[in-house]
Image (cartoon, rainbow, N blue to C red; front, top):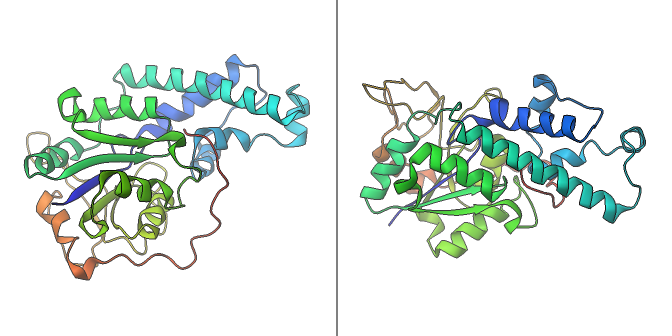
Length: 278
């Protein structure tokens, strides 16, 4: 039987701009840190897998001195961990507030997949608490309970390293050839392809201009039929799926044909060092 693995941020809900960014900035304010990320600056930060790792990009000698942070590495790591815990609290509060809607089609597709007997999972570099809050929002508690969640620091390397997807395949005990991954970023796509998995992409707020060469399908969203109608825009369809106004489960199943076998990008760029989760 087939398996459907969703990324979280940008796939289940477009959480980066209206969830993670304000949570980071509120954390910086509460801890008295001399930084606030603009929308443009955060568009670059989202390319870094993991929230703690994004925070660590701040830690130049100049910033550390200006913020009065400890020079000792262990003490500095504890400080970053404290920032990240608070940021996760703020973020999950934003999600629980319901101001960020699920992305079109995710609950519909997941429901169809569950009814068809597919295995469901989420694989994300975000903290598990953050992922579960978005999963509940996007799927509703009953369907969310059918998902296996792989998140946070369960692997040493973040996307674009394939570790999180390799872990998911191993723990779910599924055939990689039976797995469809839905991602929203080049980094996530590269992780899926490097794990030997087929990847479909739904672009999100910060990823529309990224290079998705290697994806089996790239769309603006999964879309939804009436009454919640959201028409998907097809950006790349190398297999000729032709999803029409919205992507159906049958269209994702087509991606598991032999012609859809993934080819990893030969130049994915450097794999990030181990880091924290968003």
